[in-house]
Image (tube, rainbow, N blue to C red):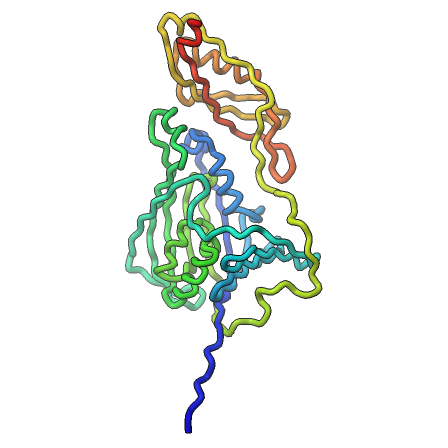
Length: 340
């Protein structure tokens, strides 16, 4: 008598992650972060720190072949990310949902290039009931646009370092997520490259690019089981609504500027070059606290400061509210302009 083979049931991995963000006691102006145009850093902060207001948050992630589901706590929204399809965002409190355009899977950092190096320590531990192995890592991060580094006359590089604990037992699920939404594997996107080693069940990341801050993630519960029916479907009583307006950081926008005067002292020396400075744009749009990052002398630094203090901006906004922000400004001076 022939024996009928049992059908292989689709499986899912579900785990709960606790995230904590701790500010480090470092003056960000004195770090390299204060020396670059930080649009990339702002965008990355929105991606990594989204929804984490109090310095701590939790999420529940479900992974199966071709789809990932993430429930964010607090916040209450649910993201359903599917391979090669638009993302669904559910709001259970209001029984509504909206769609976001499909974004190809990537571990790239916005506006940045990164190089990851790592080594195993041989240490192991049991985390959420799962055996995990420790890996130490370093990330070298470079702005994709090197024009600013050229103005500084020196290379601009950020760093991130820390440790991850990976569970090889659930490595195949990490691979599934990496193919659909690698950003769900860790708050720092490039660490999704560890999917080949296993699922990340704990990580500690120290980086100046986001603050500077220390970010710790810890899986507190993990389980594997049959795929739950309709877990990636929109409930029938939900209604579709437009996506809400962006609630992230809107950078300051220049409204008016006053040209810098080319002083006679510089003209006698026939000076060419760039003065680079960082300023604070206040909530009323005025410019305060100019600080020279790279000067030229010959009176050019003073003229750049006099000029920028007369500039006016539309202030930066965070979640719709005006806030102080830092802006980096370059003044190009040429003797040819003065001599015309």
